[in-house]
Image 1 (tube, rainbow, N blue to C red):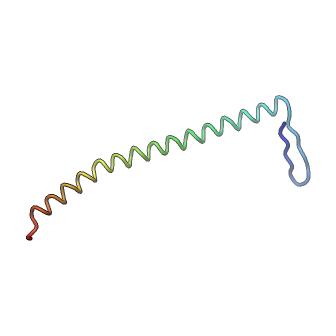
Image 2: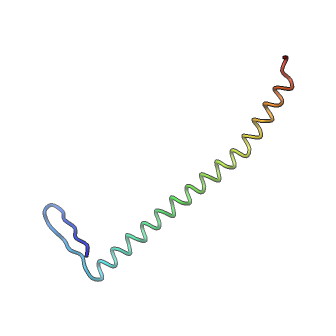
Image 3: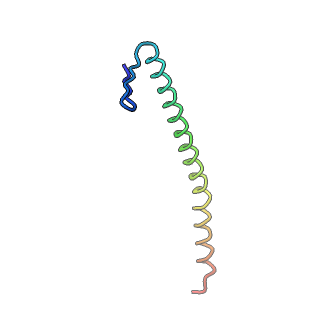
Length: 71
C-alpha cells in the first residue's frame, strides 16, 4: 500500500497499480545506477590512460633534465 498526502489530501494506491508503480520506480532506479556505474567506469579508464601516459613522460623529462643540468 502506497499512501501519498499532498495539500492535506490523502491518496492510497493499492493492487495492480501499486505493483506497476513499484516496478517503474525499480526500473528507473536500476537505469540511474547503471548510468552512474558506466560514467564512473569511463572516468576511471580515462584517468588511468592519462596516468599511463603522463607519469612515464614526467619521469623521462626529469631524467633528461637531470642529465643536461649544469651542476
